[in-house]
Length: 439
Picture 1: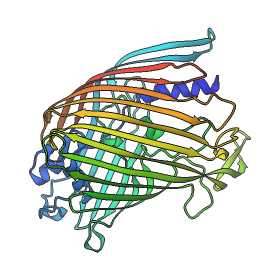
Picture 2 (picture 1 turned 180 degrees about the vertical axis):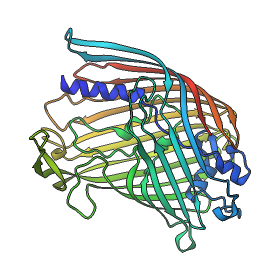
Picture 3 (picture 1 turned 90 degrees about the horizontal axis):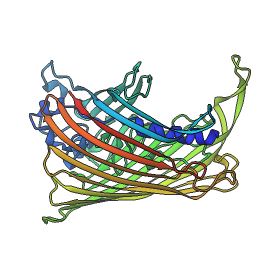
Picture 4 (picture 1 turned 135 degrees about the horizontal axis):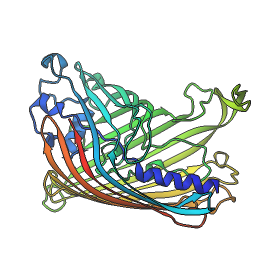
């Protein structure tokens, strides 16, 4: 029953917690351009927007240095989503009477708050800080939340005068096939970025921002790009190493312009990570509970785990208003020592196919199907398919206003997630209608 509670709770959270995204209208004011210069469909970046970000929020037009801006200019933005959300979750355990039930919640609310600031610091440095304040009521029935720095890094760009050598230091997002922090859907993220096999002790999730150092480089127009990040595994018991509970993530990607009206652009990449998580630690007695607790910095016996995969992006009809079909496949492997009651390594495969159609800048139509399946269970105490997941997300967004002062989008989307729990497959469904805005 304990495992069932945890899995169903995780599935419920997945459909109830919209993910953050980033947009700073002040950049458009700084360069006197439309926000569509950098966004395919807000908040998703187009190729130019990715290049702008890679260059440290610079267009290299002689207006990059902060000293060239009016004193009143300050690149800060706030973003939230307000509206109505209906959420339904099957298979929720109850004690009285014993069994399970289906919960149904229809609430008016909001999806938290992001406070963002980013920009250039002089000729070669940049910064990004995203703060999510603690809220007494986080909206849509999700309860109170704690404040956190979602991102906080400083970048150093064009080292030795070349775009192929740049560094970011701080809490940042690993280079992913699709940036989850600029996602077009809010009821579902990319589950494959956060998946762990049942009983796993490892906590690294590439979809979550990580503290570390990223070295990356790109050609002048981002036709070729590489990224390597060395990070500390989030929420891990820190091992006694120069880099505690280390994770290395890398991605190599590129794009080809085909110069035709049917398939003008193809993008793709390969990615992977290697991490090490300690499975033993020295302990001390907690005076409040009398129970032994691990001592941070005294954990040892690091055991390995890996995630790796590939992605392909096909842009049809137009680079500016494309029909974008994306496919991502990811594999995972974790040492048996990382699995509770482990007798072998745990292995899994997952991925998604996503279609985004942007017929005009105002409209975005989104569909995504995702599947994750365990190919080798690490323990014999649970079925091999425990925790396997299938998700379907459909949505439409209409951007009512997108100026150099603000962005406002009316959205309607729905998602359904089916997770295997103790031989059953309860479904979690969410429908969200609201207004997504930043200013």
